[in-house]
Length: 310
Ligand SMILES: Nc1ncnc2c1ncn2[C@@H]1O[C@H](COP(=O)(O)OP(=O)(O)O)[C@@H](O)[C@H]1O
Ligand SMILES: [Mg+2]
Image 1 (cartoon, helix red, strand yellow):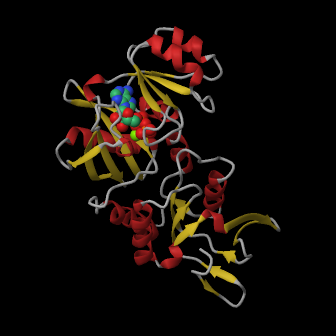
Image 2 (tube, helix red, strand yellow):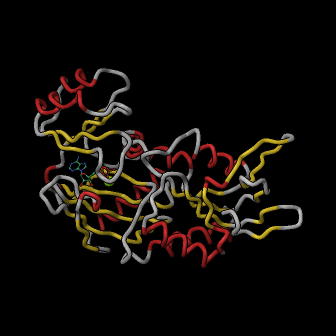
Image 3 (cartoon, helix red, strand yellow):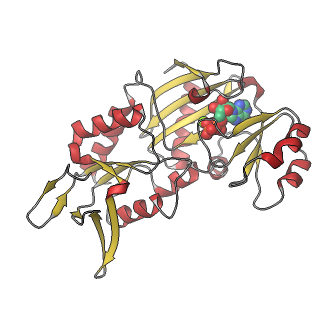
């Protein structure tokens, strides 16, 4: 942000009314570049803001926001925050979101929704309460994993760290014995979920991008090496399919709504009855170049909140 905003004689950094807020640990990926360009052309170059440039305060009984070089920052009316799923921290990024909200900014994706989506079990709790289909899943607090595995483990079983993305901390354990063998080697920084394996969807899922209650892109992702995981980062390929699975698209819209997300990437698993069950909902969705409808839809969602003031 430094150097991009106008300065006034009082040393005030006059920021944009709408921010694309980029949190720590985000890679310099294509999506981030595309979004930055879209925000710059819609809302001006000061609309792309990095959390590393901001200092938060309470001073003289008021909330304050400044740049690291001490200039006052005017809180924006609307913020779309891109935050890294693996490293999102309540003490860092969420503190900033809370501060902006307290200063009157409207967050496109609310704090509670973002938090729910970075934990693979939290978001299942919401989806189940909304009556939406998800695979049977269990997790634990501090019960020993060995004991949890010993009790009625479905075989095969999908194992996922509650915090993770890109398929990096997900695997299929063919048998309970395999899992018993490897469980001691799993990182234990966060619990895992043990999930029913949806075999009909092996190596395939439906990714639907929802913005402001509408489907703006859909694609079938397919693993190219026989692996269960269809993530692009695991070598999966993508076939655009907007409109081909209306039932899946409708389910994705309901999932985003249940979680309160304005921008969501919903992953659906195919089921034998030609229907879908929800695999996961991502608050920090990325997309490919050919999915040219996503960035304008996000800009449009920000514009709509500027004009209506909600
Ligand atoms: N229960 C399941 N049954 C079958 N395949 C699954 C299941 N859960 C996940 N997968 C596959 O693994 C991929 C990664 O799982 P996911 O929960 O989306 O984790 P990540 O956040 O790492 O992408 C999914 O896109 C899907 O292809
Ligand atoms: Mg996923």
